[in-house]
Length: 255
Image 1 (cartoon, rainbow, N blue to C red):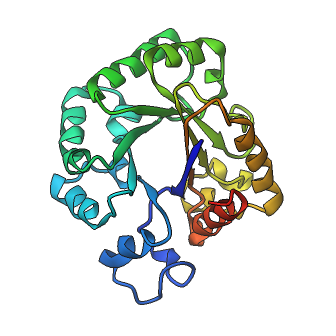
Image 2 (tube, one colour):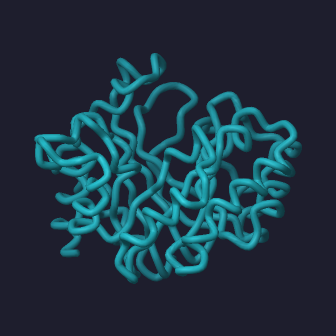
């Protein structure tokens, strides 16, 4: 099983001194990042659909072997109204990465309020149709989705399920690793239970211990033979902890 590890975003001011040199230009951050990782999750697209030139600029800096995952806009996952134009605009911005064959999929992260129902399952399939031909990976926050009907529907439709690590608070998903397509996907958000519901940067203020990473290493090893590829993204980005933990995980997996 091929394993790719990166972080959820890379352009953070509070990574200066923790990962990036203190005086690095913001426009040079990706140049530095790509020397240490072979994949990244682009999350800024959730807040605003960029011009294709913006994505082209990032793409042209990437080595041929570099791989991008890109997060779908908020209108698709959170507002969920009149999404056709938004999906078209979003797909337009992705063209530079598509043409270079570095785009490997789209991440759709739905909110806690988006609970399991036949209607919501149909909505996800509609999103998949609008976003074709790009592979779609879906992350849930509410544990009502962790059921056989969802898993079977995803397998049939070819939609990837995103496993997560997050605080074990009521209603949130358990740290279970499994895949519904040949490609598995894991996002680690940290376990900051105190600040989770408050949102903001402190939600992702967490530093994984070796013991906690070892637990995931064992789950990853059990995935062998069940998936051809696994993406792991650390989203505990506060103060560069995602970089520290991602690099440690790479060491533990001998990558």
